[in-house]
Image 1: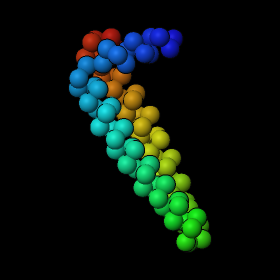
Image 2: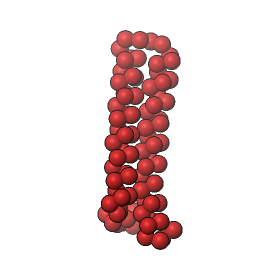
Image 3: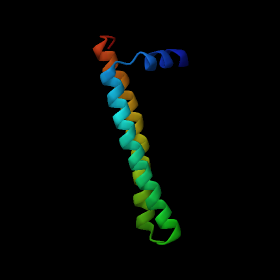
Image 4: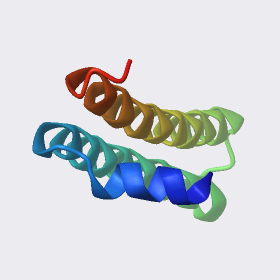
Length: 83
């Protein structure tokens, strides 16, 4: 099963790879922002709202990252008429 996923990743078309690469960069930026908010909460401010904002952004970045990976595989499957 993992070999199948790795083979599909290696055979992604350029447009699907570009979607995944750009999306993961966006998710990484969101993750860095959320980590900086959480560090600010830990060091300076002890307001629970800052903590909830940081955790929500972190969860959002992980969810978006997974969705961009799935989106790339689905776009590639549609272009190759596998789906």
